[in-house]
Image 1 (cartoon, rainbow, N blue to C red):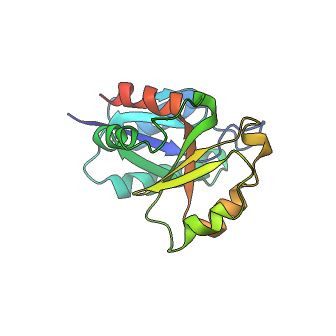
Image 2: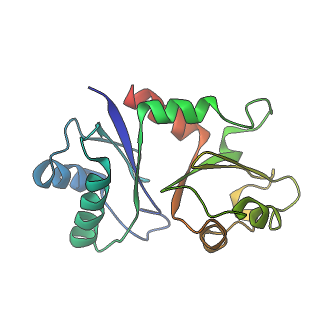
Length: 179
């Protein structure tokens, strides 16, 4: 049986959008057909056996989270194979970048045309972005995420699609957990 990660956007951030992981696991076990449910850290990473209809499961999980916790958050799925391919296609693998400065934004679908050009206009010195398939790789400057101009609203407007970002360490761990 293959495994996948269901990634929630912006939960448990600075005390906002609270979704307790233990309660979420129990809810999903009770109200969905998901199997082998686990979570990884509190930032909204669900690991499970890959469901037959991933799109329907993402919609169901989103609705359950909204109903049970009052948080409307996109749920984006990636299979183990997709996570492995994502990591193999890391455009910054050659660079000596601290793991905390390299993030990948997993997108619900392909972004609108010209999105990368719009984002590059907003970069601060030392930042880089690359689009690889439906994943936006962001190498933040040495000042980190807090110094960027690539805010959620800027990213959403430029991309025209929702996504959720994880640092390289988290994505590597999710590859292990879905193996």
